[in-house]
Structure formats: structure tokens, C-alpha cells
Image (cartoon, rainbow, N blue to C red):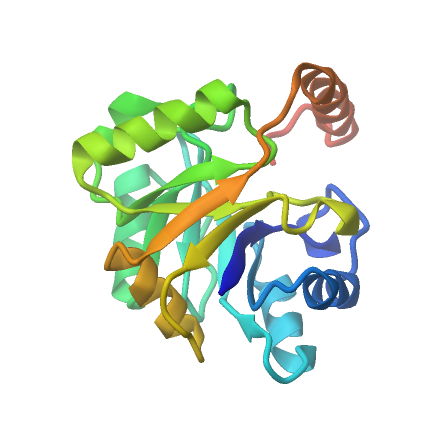
Length: 220
């Protein structure tokens, strides 16, 4: 099964992609599971759970902003407060029975970095992010290997045409979000995708700066 475990909707505030459009893109591209991980919000996941067609698994998720960078929280029911320390955020995710994954750890500005990841009790590391560079993804995979942690893959899509550019492939049949996450944790999954190229990096940097200015120089 193909699973895109990092997608953003209009609930993130930095794009206009509808949840319905994301789910339709998943259906067209043969993606069987999706995690709509909006910035500091479960609204996209909740909407997806309400309207997802039969056969498409929705993994509840959010991308959480901590003091040091971003992490992905999977299979939680309540939003975790933003701007906590990494340790506090992980504790809150675990208290809900959720899974804490370091998102794009080597990305400038929003990545947690190697030292922070090593110092905390993460359950996994995002090893394929289609909006990260190939070098950043390679370093994330290497870090996960050195820590004995599983890796996840996602597109980090902010437009419907980007959905599925980075994916997690489960080697077992899955019928629920718990099945998908257990497969990742047990090491019976792989990741595939396309990393961000030079031209995309320039466009990405321009877009990020634009949104940053638009937010009044506040972190997302």
C-alpha cells in the first residue's frame, strides 16, 4: 500500500488546497492512506475522517511547531500546544498513545537538527520529504539508521498535484491507521519519492519568505 504521510490542506494557513481535493488526488494516484498533517491543527485530519471515501485510510496527524523546529504527531485525538520544548511535545503525543516523528530534520529554519533529534525520544524520522533536498533526505535516513529508528515518507504537499511525490510503502495489507503506523514501527515499510531540485529550492525559498513577511515575521 502507498501512504503519503505528510500533506497540508488549507487548514495550515499557507495554501488553499481543499481536503476534498487531497482525497481525490489520492484516489487518482492509487494512494491507500494519507495523513493530512496541518501546521498546529487537527482540523484537516478531522475533516478528512468525515468525508474520506471507503477504502482510503486517513491517519490523524498534525505538524507541530516546537521551540526548536517541526515534528509530526500521528494518531492523536487532541491538538498539542505549539512552541513547547521538544521533550514536552513528545510527552504530550505519547500521553495520547500517539507517535512522534522528526519532520525533515535537516531543513534550514524548521528542521530540528541532528543534536536535538538524538537528545529526544522520537519514534521515527521522516526520511523522504519531497520538499527537502536529496542531501537532507539522505542525512535523515542515515541518522535514523544510526539511532535504530524507522523512517516515514511524505510529499509535504501544499498543492494537489504534489500529493504522492513522497510516499511510505507498506509491505503488508493495512485496513486502518493503526495498521499503517504499526507497519512503519515494525520496519515493514520503505519510502520512495523525488527530492527537491535546485529550481524548486529557489521557488520554495521565495515562497517561504513571502509567507513569513505576510505573517508579520512570525514562525508558522
